[in-house]
Image (tube, rainbow, N blue to C red; front, top):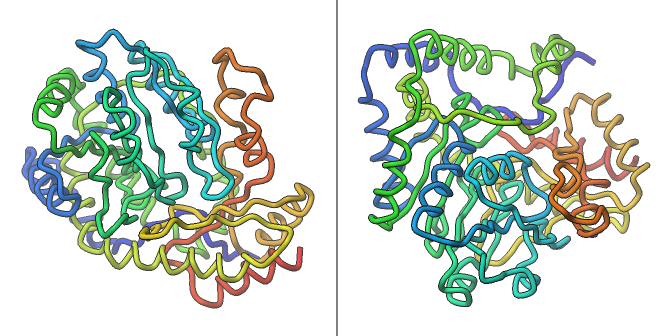
Length: 392
């Protein structure tokens, strides 16, 4: 079967991608407009653009580190390995907390046994777009510790009607190709604290300029991305595309500037962000409804007062063999799936932990399969995914 639904995709008319080329010579006009629009959507006074979510996180850490003797950053044990790369680049120490198998986010109940006098910040990651609740309670319980919201996978997710958690000291987002608002790279930092914003801006001033050649390459990649997500084309050229998929975190990275070419595309995507988020919420909840009564599966328990704009939909198979069968069957029926991160952080990096130190993170990594939930899926596709998993 040639038709394949990609695991992630954004729908943007080709004409809008082509039109974004005007950003090559527009200075930073589109970026300023994007910052104003993001500030209104996220309800934050300060928006700082960056070339990636990875860079955004690093800039936050670099700013927090100055003036503090603390050096520990608490991360969930199952998340993107790139977070560890950022922590280490900032000269800080990653400290891990196991996850909950209810919503696949950090298990905040474990934090009192992990926090120390060296804890600089806690990073609450909204894995798969599922909101991690309780950041406000963490701030009240540990007032001397910064709370960072990692919303890289959750643009469009809402908690009590807001797109970013106001209880966090600072939030950061990713606009990479697989994210909910993808401009083939890019990200932003959102916050209300003016003093901290000024420190982050100072750190960002050393970011490398993006040359004209790099801007043209970024534009060409966005153009290609807008074309290849077509299910028939995606299936036909998948053997070539799979060679370019990222399978491991980078060893290092450079902090560069966001471009007006990308900002032009982000502005167009932002105008349809509500509709895109609503579709992601619907598709994810439809999959939960169709799979939640299976004794062979674990699907996320969605916290009250949240609406998750799923980046991908996570399903955990209690039997790893059943996961393998489902993965192959879904591919035959035209659906790309992903194992996401194959190992928890303490198995990706030498962080001084025992290999069996985080049982829930290890269980998730061994049995997880993520499914597409983006705008290209139809009701028929959702039913087929549900039926295929249940029959595998």
